[in-house]
Length: 451
Ligand SMILES: Nc1ncnc2c1ncn2[C@@H]1O[C@H](COP(=O)(O)OP(=O)(O)OP(=O)(O)O)[C@@H](O)[C@H]1O
Ligand SMILES: [Mg+2]
Image (cartoon, rainbow, N blue to C red):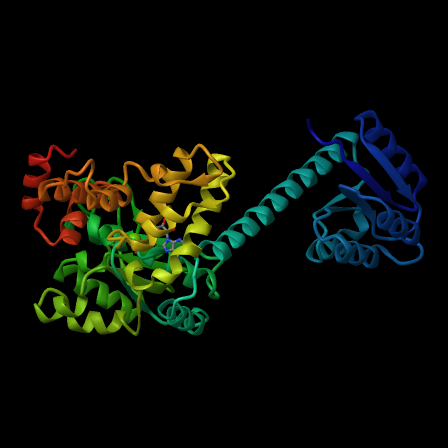
C-alpha cells in the first residue's frame, strides 16, 4: 500500500491555503495549514509531516528561518518553496539551504501534485540510501571477529594505526585466513570508506587481458575491443584497489603496475593520454613474495612499493584460542540465515574443533559451522552434525571401529576429501596445502574415486 502523505502548508495567503487543501484532500491526503511561521513550526513540532509547502514571505519569522528550523528538526523532510515570480532568486537561495524544490505562483493543481510526488520519491530514495549505508556500516563493524589471541591483537593494532592513512599494505597469510576481509576492514575504517573498494583477482586473469582489466582500453585498440573499457584503477578512483593474489602477475605487467603506482597515473591500452588516479593500494598473497623475488619471478622494486606496511595473518592453528569466538560468530550468522535457533555446541564438538588443524583456516571453519547449522536437528550442534566433514571422520578414523583399525589409505582418502572440501574443490590450493603437486593430487583423487 502506498503511504498517503500528511502535508503541511504554510502561507499567509488564505486563497493558497484553501486551494492546496482542496487538491490534497481530493487525493485522499491529509493536510494542515498555517497562516504564519510561528503557527507552522508549532504544528511541525507536534505532528509528523511527509512534505512541507512553505511560502518565503511570511509574517513573524520569515520563510528562510522556518526552513532552517524544519531542517534542524528533521533533515529528511522535503520542503517545497511556494513563491511569487518576483522572488525566484530567494527561492533558489532556499534550495541551496536545503529546500527540495520550488513552485512559482500561480500554479495549477497538476503542478502541485507533480511537485509533491517528486518530493515523496526523493524522500524515499534518501531514506533508502541512509538505510543501506547504515546496514553496510553495521556489517563492516560486525564482520571481522578478532578474538583474544596475541597474534590478532598485533594485527589489529597495526590496522588501527594505518586505516586513516593512505599507505600501501601487503597482506600475507594462508588461504582462508581473512586477507580480503581485512582489506575491506582497512578500507571501511579509513577516509575512503564512502568510495569504492575494488577487487582485482590477479591470479585469475590471462596476461593478455590483464592490462586492459587494470588500466582499461580504448575502442578498437585490439581485436575484441568493441567498446572503450574503464580499467579497475579508474573504477576505484577515490577509493581502494585490492590486488588479490598479487604473485600471479607476470613480469611484464609488474613493470606497468609499478609505473602506475609510482606515477599515480594509468594509460588505457591503445591510448597515449595518461589519466590521473587517486587510489589506495592494498595487495594480498598467500605466497612468499620475498622468495619469488629471490627467484627472479617478482620485481624487487615492486615488492618494496607494495610492502610499505606488511601485515601477516596467522593461520588458524596458530591462534586456536580465537576459535570459540569465531564459532559463536558463525553460529549467529548461520542461525539467522537458516532461520534456526541453535544455542551452542556440545563438549565433544568443541573438543573436535579445537583439536583440528584447519588447513583451510577460517573459511573451512565457517563452512563447517554453516553445514552443521543446516544439518542440526536439535538446539545444540552434536558430533554427528559435523558429518561429511573431515573433523568427525578424522577424529574417529584414528579410533578402531569394532576393534578394527583403518588403513593408511583410508586416512589419506578422508584427508584429501576434507581439504578439497574446505578449499571448495580448488585443486591447486588443495595440492599446495597437502604439499603435493597437482598431478599427484589428480592421480590420488582418481585412485580413491574422489569427485
Ligand atoms: N576474523 C574473521 N572473522 C570472521 N570471519 C572471517 C574472519 N576471517 C575470515 N573470515 C571469513 O572466512 C572466509 C575467508 O576469508 P577471506 O576470503 O578474507 O580469506 P582469504 O585470506 O582472502 O582467502 P584466499 O587466500 O583463499 O583468498 C570469509 O567468508 C570471511 O568472511
Ligand atoms: Mg582472498
